[in-house]
Amino acid sequence: MTLTANWSYPTAIRFGAGRIAEIADACAAAGIKRPLLITDRGLADMQITTRTLDLLEAAGLGRAIFADVDTNPNEKNAAAGVKAFRDGGHDGVVAFGGGSGLDLGKLVAFLAGQTRPLWDFEDIGDWWTRADAQAIAPIVAVPTTAGTGSEVGRASVITNSQTAEKKIIFHPKFLPTVVICDPELTVGMPRFITAGTGLDAFAHCVEAFCSPHYHPMSQGIALEGMALVKQFLPRAYADGKDIEARAQMMSAAAMGATAFQKGLGAIHALSHPIGAIHHTHHGTTNAVCMPAVLQFNKPAIHDRMAQATAYLGIKGGFDGFCAYVDELNASLGIPRTLTDLGVENPDVERIVAGALNDPSTGGNPVEMTQANTTELLLACL
Image 1 (spheres, rainbow, N blue to C red):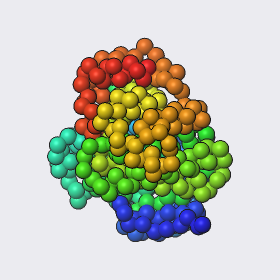
Image 2 (cartoon, one colour):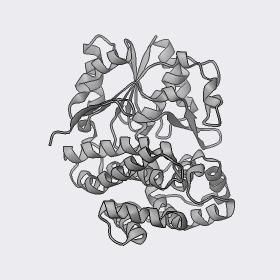
Image 3 (cartoon, one colour):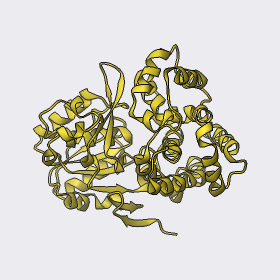
Image 4 (cartoon, helix red, strand yellow):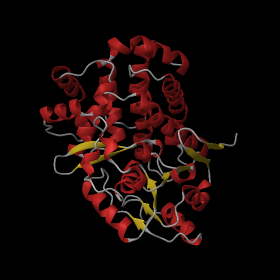
């Protein structure tokens, strides 16, 4: 079966192996004539990046790159990116990479035309309406991992380097105009990144499926996303050159980010402050937290997960699903606890406070309080 398609939900997506060759046409469709390619330091000199720059240059679109992007991008990276965008006279962004490159690329396109400071646009109430929507530059997104799904998201996760807090910056026009999902770009991912990013997609689907909010479309997408991860993440982990598995995981990543319009929960509420303070890999942190969060939410999700397991081909209902998660984590080399992940001497009160302030908290099926969230964090440690 050939995995190639053109989709317009949730935005225009050019999906299929080799479709990075269409990058110049994607820029034209977005109305971009002088793109700035934004990625992270690790990708800056890799062949997939230089080839993309070659394609842009050959099409007469210039050869401009900004790669001063940290693993957990922050306001300093954003300011430098905005300066590069303005100084270069750019009119759009090619956001290229994993979550960090995609998130910062979208943010630079958003901020370059604004006059208010970054934190004025945090995802609180209707703060997004403070932005000048007409000044937001168009975005073409090119994921090189299969996890965050930021290529189809309306927000960026940015770390406040002064407070070591992860903040969500939101605007509907963060959603890229065109996305190129080319699984060939993910072939070189190391196994631990394949595992961590794949389990990030899985966490998005699981939490969206468990969220109590009403969104039947997201519910269905989340369930099928879980099924794709179950079938294809072990294959992608075992053989990084398995293009079908890589393609299906790219689908699962986009599906997870589409589904979590319905809400996230305690997994992300914990992983955001942990990652901001201890600089752990986001998807891997999600995977470590998931078993404890499932037990934490058991009273509210027991029956719902039994429905999911019937579709996923997992025996034993809720308990069977929990056993499956434990086995999946172990098979992908995921540490059992946050301590094993490298979270040493944690400030429990600070992490709990960060979790309770995180927007993801509102989507958890069990109400999170200081007392029960402290117990949950200790269980993860």
